[in-house]
Length: 145
Image (cartoon, rainbow, N blue to C red; front, side, top):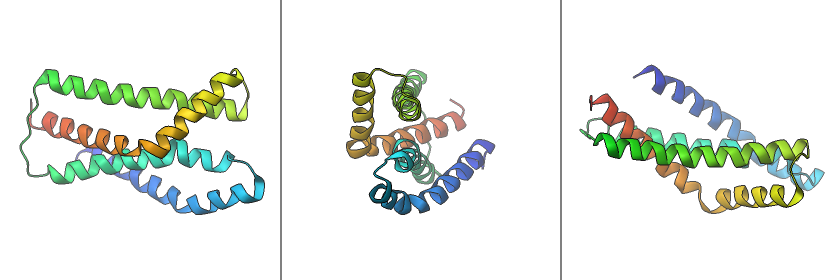
């Protein structure tokens, strides 16, 4: 197992361990009428769990497989996954900063918040697929092409 896979396994285990308190964070909404505690789960931990879960499932499925991607295809996949993650993280980070320090215009912050919640409600499997694509690229890289 490569060092990168070990690091990702540790991150995945820490993420799953942090997700054990999700029910308590959801229950705190009824007590405090605030989404501050649950936002971190919605914005960061749950999508990261889907991404890493897809990566490790892809690694498991391709353990004995021989996948070789063309360099252009691999670069395209990596660019698409990087663009997806960069756009999502930019919206997440701006929404999180605005939640604690209101620095954005109200209309922009509400649109970013709606975008992130929409992604959480409708597009979590995209993170799983992105993780599987990263696994295919990693296996192809490991095969020397």
